[in-house]
Length: 231
Image (tube, rainbow, N blue to C red; front, top):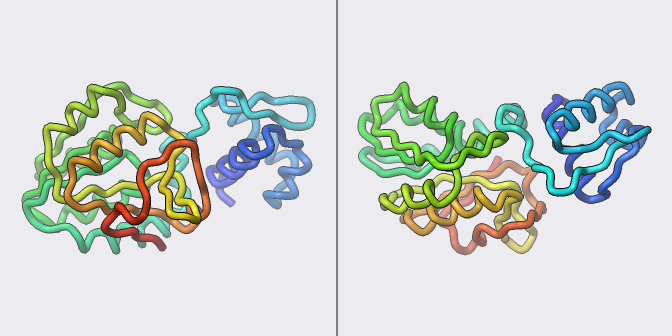
């Protein structure tokens, strides 16, 4: 398992149990205790956990989001397959909202097949990668969340309200068994809700690991979206 996948599983365990002994994590992840210690050191360096003798605890109020560059490595083949399916909804001259998720970023290469699109995103890295295209690219600006490289806040939301999009491609941290699409970030959920209200069609992209997962903030429900695309 890649480091990013292990770190996410450790955080998931800590969210549920609050504390985690190294030997328990090693057995759960099928790795050595030395590997778990290195992973916990990395999470502590990022301000997510506090190391204790023989284990770690989840820091109260700490950001529980893995950095974007780590999430990009997770389930990349699944995300590529999802993006390929999602690309069939794109048409020439559309106005498109993209959130800042790593899943939606996999759509970018498919825009090269079109000559004239208007794309609005709150993703810093998403906008950077789109800058090489010939399309009209708008980035919201606003307060930047460092872990997710996403612009959030009222400034970003007000910018989004200037547009009416044909499509909104978005992802989120989890989809519950009863169909609630949820996320751990209040700020990103807020921006997604604004994009949702100002778009005609809503296309939710998610890999299978998000099924059955429920986080703090509700974005929408599956009966409110037009398409849900998974691997």
